[in-house]
Length: 153
Figure 1 (cartoon, rainbow, N blue to C red):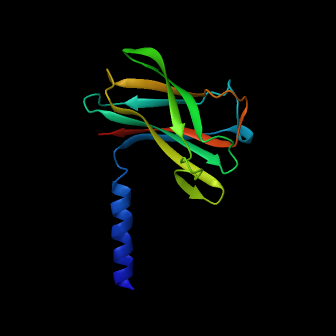
Figure 2 (tube, rainbow, N blue to C red):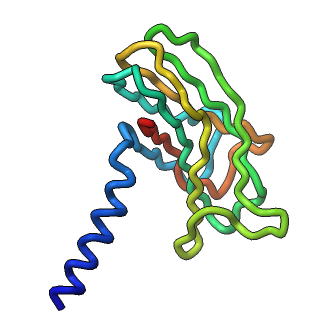
């Protein structure tokens, strides 16, 4: 029994240590699973150290009844010494054969998309990232939540 508990402890500790570099990880629920053009979740990240590079991920959860195999979003960024910009990203949600990508739990699927790799913040301070859906359908049905994760490299 003690051996099993110790083994479980080391597995949990090992898995949790993989996420220690995340300086920010927040999701925003999409009301009624219907993401409209005017609903633009914003995420404010406080950067205390601008020397390392960071990976910025978009977190997405959708249902298994989502109508498309992808999702286009605009990632807006603004902050100290950073020009206000928006980047269009395509997030693949299904493989060519129709299988959903990402982790599943019952009828929900979770995808983490690497939007910016080795990103350098120009200065310390607060930076705001806003995510806007950029599909032709409005509202976009079956999107449960959208989020942002920033990981120090």
